[in-house]
Image 1 (cartoon, helix red, strand yellow):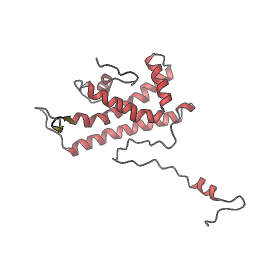
Image 2 (cartoon, helix red, strand yellow):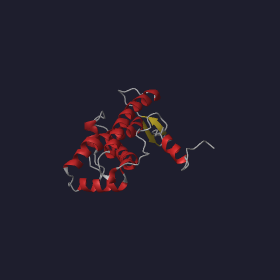
Image 3 (spheres, helix red, strand yellow):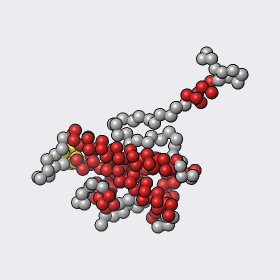
Image 4 (cartoon, one colour):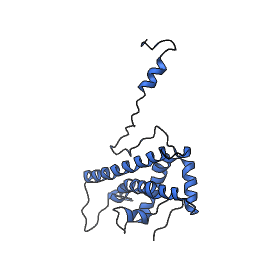
Length: 187
């Protein structure tokens, strides 16, 4: 059985059981990806303070029913796909004293770079869905501590570059430019 990393809310074994990763995948590679998903994807979404409090409750096994629901319905699915997005390059490539090499096996043919990119894009789409669910849940859960930054991006950058979510500010811009007596005339 895989070791559960302190405070990471999910184990390598759970990732294997709930995703397409095979059961013989090296736990070390999965645990590196879990740490990255936790630190780089989950923490910026929910905030350091909330996540520390939540993780402490999880480790002490004192989560209430609502927190268990959040963990099982929102956080774990998000972490599974965030981990998959981050593990793909590690599974396909190996860095050793000979440089960066494609990982191959006698019975497997290596994938082309295009095939790997297409598969990673598919997994990124799933991450985007779970990330949006998680952000929306925290926006609407009536807890001021869990409200994400209103400017938070709700995608996992699956296009290969960052496109911020668009928020129409034209009305507030128009009102801010208006004088107290009459409307702004564009001077």
